[in-house]
Length: 252
Ligand SMILES: [Zn+2]
Image: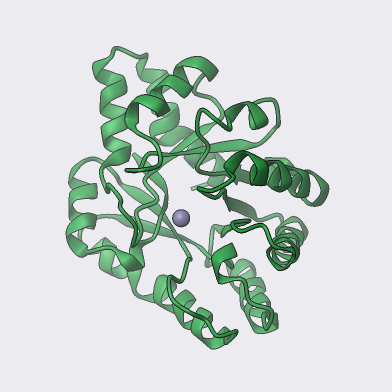
């Protein structure tokens, strides 16, 4: 299985162990700094270095392969960002990261929108995949703005929009955009994810846990995949959301 969105730097080694033992071979770890940046780019660059240079080694000790996505999360919106963009360009050029992420809108301020657009432009220019966050609050309203900005600034085939649920799925299902289902306590239970797959088919979706410093379940992807199996869904369909769609989308 592939868990397509997590935050390894805020999780324990025991989680990596459990994930690997439960059948997750690969996970994509994204940047998000949970503390204050004080508009200091060095703090975010250090955060990037930790994710790139320490977490994949730590996870590999337990068998889990980590792929890295880096970008400026909307909660880390920073105006002093030239150095960060320079670093991102280098990392893309050297193929050190497989996507820009997670980025997006959270409080949906003008500053967040500007930074979001700038990162989409970089992704479009370099043909890099993008992992996009949608917020817990005002989800549908903010998703509409995210969709508009995506369609105006980037080839939608490069994009996965994450944390989609039953209340927001209709806004995206007719677009040529990959959809991330985040199965996580307080966000979406296994049953809701399965209802979405049952209603809309398995082709457009990726699964993830988004385990972070917030309430999380490192086994939410295997729990979803094994529940699909127990309920008798077709093995070929299950494999699409377990790993095939993610392999194809991220080219891993
Ligand atoms: Zn996340």
